[in-house]
Amino acid sequence: MKTNGWVWITAGCLWLAGGACHAIVGRLEVESSSYELLAAQEAFSGLAKITVEGGCCGTTGSGYLLNNEWLLSAAHVVFGQNPSNIRIDRGTESSSVRQMYFTNEWQANPVTGLQQGGDLVLLHLAEPFQYSAQTHLASGALDDRFAVMLGMGRGGNGVLGAYDIPLARAATNTIDRQLQTSGGGGFLVADFDSGADAQNTLDLRSVNQRYYDDGFTAPLPSDLLLNGMDTKSLADATRDGIIQSLFPEIPDVWLEGTTANGDSGGPLLVYDGATGEWQLAGVTSWGFNPSLPEGFARGDSRYGDVSFFTDLSQHTDWVAATIPEPGLPALLGAALVVLLRRKRWIGGK
Image (cartoon, rainbow, N blue to C red; front, side, top):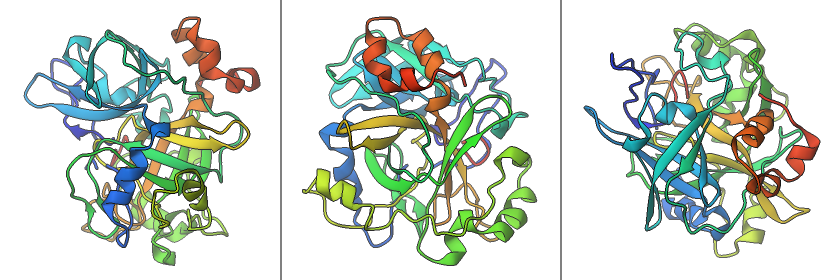
């Protein structure tokens, strides 16, 4: 998971988090202000902060508006909570939650862990926000797509990990995998590369085998094994040119990053050049760092970290069934026509 704080789901206080949590963490040589400026763009104004209040301690996460009264987030951020204990903040606006809707795949069961791909919740807001946009969902093949991830959690850099105060931040990356789970859901996967072979995680069969399969209590299921690739999965300066062409006020720097605590539920967005809009492709669920040596927390967001985003293209029918007309057609757009399918646990974020 990538929430800040503790998540309790029953009166007996069963903790769902499987490890350390961390927010958008960027490159060592890039100023944090560049990641903050990217998040502040009007195109990404649907980002919101979720606060779960009450109990012995609180939890914070992230979410993204689909329209002025529906927010999409990760199920583990709010599961088991009373909607009256949840507050949504966006800029100077705040809202309570009227009702929560979870996918059928979400079981909140630590035993199933990574095998469930339905870590999603739709929150119906009691007080609509002043948000005139309609967020469209992405569809089709998403691997190798350039993407922007956003969150409200802690910042930091690839060498030190997450240490900075929680703020709205955004980073770029490449979607390296679009994976199916046996339960009918799926994940979009991106790793945080320094440029060095030893930290290009998704190219390293030996690192995955040594540190992940033997180092975690719930091994990755076989259909999610992160086998190596022949090419480096770098969101390099050339692909970052998309950002500079759309937002010229942002410095021309390498904005690759990864997610961290407080980012759970935050969006992964891809750009559709045909329509000129950013479309919602995934929601931050969990992550881990198999490239770190023994003794390091593998939930850390340093170079080599791998983020898993629940694949929304596997859940378009759930969104369609949950959000009533008339907002639905505008929301789903082409995704509804192309595909109608249902679709950070360990070391999560």
